[in-house]
Image 1 (cartoon, rainbow, N blue to C red):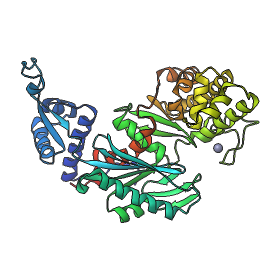
Image 2 (cartoon, protein in one colour):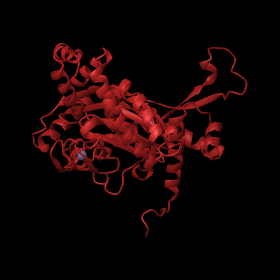
Image 3 (tube, protein in one colour):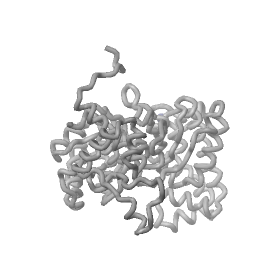
Amino acid sequence: MAKHALQGSNINLVKLHNLQVVLQHLLYEPNLSRVQLAQRTDLSNTTITNLISELLEQGIVSEVENGEESEGRLRPVGRPRTSIHLEPSARFAVGMHIGVGSFTVAVTNLLDEMLINRVEPFDINAPSSQVIKKMAATIKAMIAESGVERNKILGIGIGASGLVEVATGINLLAPNLNWHDVPLRDYFQNQLHLPVFVDNNVRAMAVGETYFGLGRGVDSLAFVYGRVGVGAGLILRGQPFRGSISGAGEIGHTVMLLEGGEPCRCGNSGCLETLVSESAILRSADGIASQNPEGILDAIMRNRQDLVPIGRVFEAGRQGDQEVRRMLSERAYYLGVALAGLVNLFNPEMIILGGIFSSGEEYFLDTVRQVTSKMAFGRMGERVRICSTGFGWDASVLGAAALALMNFFYQQDQVKP
Ligand SMILES: [Zn+2]
């Protein structure tokens, strides 16, 4: 049978499917009345009433008397008497973002709002078994610290570095950590006795934006992240698009310079990553600082220890270092060229920039918009909405938690009726 053929469904799954349809509508549009829900979902009023009573019983939704909200004033004509909204504290999720040399754990509520979080360093040369042991201990401690009831935790979402086999939760390859075939899902499920969902960390950020961020309800989007590496998480029809071996979105290894580019860790040279990653920009900034020992950048590099290194480069541009501004503008141009290619291939409705492209958005956003608009074919570049993440650096850990939350809102086959 063809892999994409539809599967049959039994009656319990139909009910579960309808529950999830209702939950999704409430996620994207809070405070709907039963009548509005029936209209939006094409379900009968009776079906909606039955589904809502079940969700009320489970504490997943609450009902608001609209009269109460307007503090004694008369309810406006035509406004429904009551409306339904998701109860943020009905369920919780744990998210863990695995970075290079540090990992972040957060506990969030049903709407992916952060309750607590913690960043822990780890030695990238340590064996993976030692690192994941520390991760499990941190997750345990964070769950205890959050005070959240364990039976209300939907699961643990893990945004891993590099290639992930989603079906098994195995981190096949994380070159920056020298990890091969690390069985993340099985390990954490055995240690923590909660469902575990693993995906690539940038794809997780795309999921977070699609359900809880700027991309709410958007049909197709790309989340483009730059830090140690450069990658894109792609969403198609509201779901992550992973490609045949989960490698879709590796735009960091698009060759931008056919000649004279710097060698890339992938084996090629002149890749996008060698131009716009954090380390590529820092290398270039070091060159500028050493050539201009009395320059603005050099002074900031020496005196602004309060800023992270890339923050010092951005600050030098802000204070008017022309060499820095020129370098950043050139790097933003290359990013724009690569994103024009992404637009031609994928034609997304929205592109969200994250990582250093977001923390340095004053250097990246406008240039990327202009270049993409000019270079992408036809009107595709003008139509795509390009913005910077609203989550800042939290996009990574909120995205990881969103993997567990997505399962609750979307994956009917994994939730027991
Ligand atoms: Zn490369």
